[in-house]
Amino acid sequence: MTPTSTAVDRVAAAYERIRAVDRPEIWISLRDEQDALDEAASIDERVAAGETLPLAGTVAGVKDNIDAAGFDTTAAAPSYRYRPDADSTAVSRLREAGSVIIGKTNLDQFATGLVGTRSPFGAVRNAWRPDRISGGSSSGSAVAVALGLVDVALGTDTAGSGRVPAALNGIVGVKLTRGRIPTTGVVPACRTLDCVTVFAREAALAYNTAELLAGPDGIDPLERTLEEAARATGTALPARPRVGIPTAEHLDGLAPGWADAFHAAAGRLADTGVEIVEVDIAPLLQAARMLYESSFVAERYAAVGEHIDAHRELIGTDLDPSVSTIVLGGADRTAVELYRDRERLDRLGAVAKAALSGCDALLTPTTTWHPTLAEIAADPIGGNSRMGRYTNFANLLDMASSSVPAGTVDGLPFGVMITAPAFHDLAVHQLAQRLLAPALEILVVGAHLTDQPLNHQLVAAGGSFVRSTTTSSDYALFALDTTPPKPGLLRVAGDGASVAGEIWSLPASGFGTFVAALPAPMTIGRVTLADGDSVSGFLCEPIATEGAENISAHGGWLAWQRSRVVE
Image (cartoon, rainbow, N blue to C red; front, side):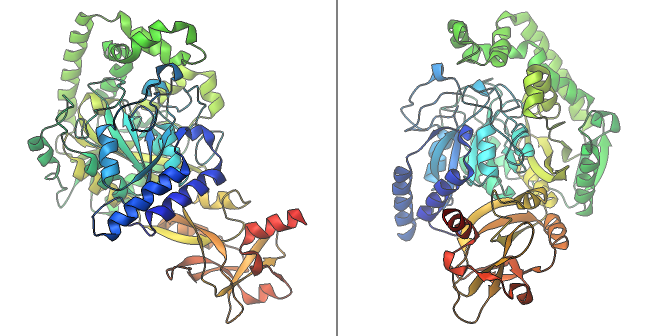
């Protein structure tokens, strides 16, 4: 990301967006706005003095199982709350790069779940459709990014928590090779498997941020060495990459339309010169089931089981029943079971490696379905277990993996996952860039604004909110006689005004579909912004404004609507 505003401007815009969106369940704690603005001002001063801060001008959220000085850490369990003395390594590096952290985000309690509903702080609703789950466990982080509240957010990933919510909210989720980003200062879910992950709306920002956080800190006993990490920069794709996809039987059970969307994504990748081959991923799926259906669940008890055991009276209130059942169930596993399961996993890993031999990466759907909140409430364990079919094996088998948007199905985001051997992080990113079409920006000033009647059309086309803005003072805004009511924007020679609007980002395919369906008298043309930049935006044919009320003096469509309510 190349910031287009100062850090102060970006922080102010973030808080304004938070108030406008009104999604309190995203946050467990939110920083005082003035405090964040003061830090942003300091960052702007450092940049002006010539200091290089690669993330200056961005704001960030942090999953609340990752320590950040100045915030409590709860892991979504109020009884577990503590105030850390210092930042986690990941947060410290995020701050050092110039990003302003504005809050701690909600999660499935103790990072145990892929649904985003297992929290006493509330179920986090999907960014696109509030009756659907957000995915978890990094639910708040993913939705905060998808709604444009923050530019980047930190999550964690043990079974897919940094990838499933990315897919369900139409954003990018990057999980580098296990141990490349230290987990120092992270509340463990499964200590030997946990990864810190990064969410962003753009693949480049997500990957570059993750690389800024990577590298040994000398504290995490499971960190990868500098020699190992150096291999990550040498795993670029060959001239003719070869990517495996699952055979047909391993795509059974996907939500309606998802198999077609997956094959379409594979086709787009092939169009970039990638060779697509079918592979039998049965050993990977067998390994995936071991994460919860074997003795490996004992590690969850080792992490937080004693706390839950000591507070059983809180199960059902402070402590989530599903999480408690899973974690406490790990207490009965034996060392003999663990060693047997370890051997079985090793053998499955060897078979999987042979099946993927010759492939640079594997492409799969990220998850299998996108349930409603009600569906998960009716079957919290079974519904959750369906989410991790393609994600659970990655950390068990030490693989790099990222989820990227791949269009929509029935108006909801569909995501695919690119997975490769350890230290092939760059190759994963390069494939993600091939898959993602360039995004195009559009200015909206009326019925397509956030919470307005036609905003759903932008969302259905894969759009995501970028920022609020204003035009230059060369425009006039008219209230047109249409259904639903909408304004018409015209560039004028004199007596113009600045008009408030929003910038939205659309994938190229979504942009084309959206523009093709635009009814007369609306048109798309270049609009000059107050900062001198120009962007594609909504305009209207001049004839449509004849006899229409000039509402330019109000400064924008929403302000004019509010004035009518007062009148």
